[in-house]
Image (cartoon, rainbow, N blue to C red; front, side):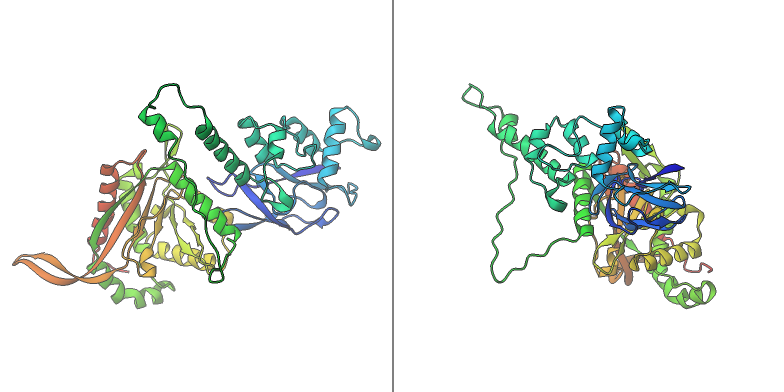
Length: 450
């Protein structure tokens, strides 16, 4: 007989936690290998967690709507016919097992399962439940420990989670407000005049304006994905000092080539060719010329990525965005890029993406021209350091250099913009990379064969 731990899986490079949406299986239910046990969600994608073994669910350690750190044990599976009691999966029983294990005894003389020992060895100075009966997740407890927040103080925080539980967002907001209160209520120095930095520190607190509601307004609750996207975007702005550069490119040759060959391309490869794979092809070439755009930052270290994995922002029917990733895009020709772009976009719209298809991106493209926008200033998709936006292609009068002199002609023009992390990408690198992408698009061979 054995107890197998079910671990919260890693869902992406920058994803450190996931929310349990639904337990498909309950304590006492039999499961087969690869059978779905629960559904989870991150700010990127919803996914199902399969069983690694055949057996019976013996314990469930977290409830629905709880947020759990990656790598945490979330359930136990009994194998080889081990007896499972219906109430074996409650958090209360897990706590009893942990306490019994610490006292050197166990209920009815039965050995404690592996998860109890693991939880005991990893326990912090804060218990999961306080004397007031409040439950605190491991993530909240770890943050409280790090910030020296006592259990009594933690009990005073108003929770917005299920049954009033304190979430990560709640405790971080409390810490921010606590810091603000400390700053604004600290005693003033004895001198009559404060230094400029001190005075500035006390006047930078932002208080959201009050919102008045009446019969002509409607309050709409953000859905789960929108909340997570909002947090991701705010965190990106807090992490990276954003700078955006722009160039305008003459893509007449590219535009005309696609118009002339899109029917033949579909007949040969069975795929409709859009502008997106052509943009990605140019981006890949430019990354090879400027590899320091294909990096991430870890503290004071720059992590240079050898793989070129291009993410492409895709719109979902709900209006939210998701970024599937084309892995090793530099190994694909235009036909291969087209097939990958179409496949990922179609499955994104139908919520059929796999977790591994939205992770490990090293650079992101967003095509704002799809919405008729001429340019944009996108927010960096952390932990990347740059994101490129392609605007709409429009007919415009432009100066054309010919052997007979400069002429005014109608050309297909578009704007490209690059937002980049100014901690590691300066204006020279960011501007040069963006200009190189535009050069590759402008130099597109109008006589290129399929």
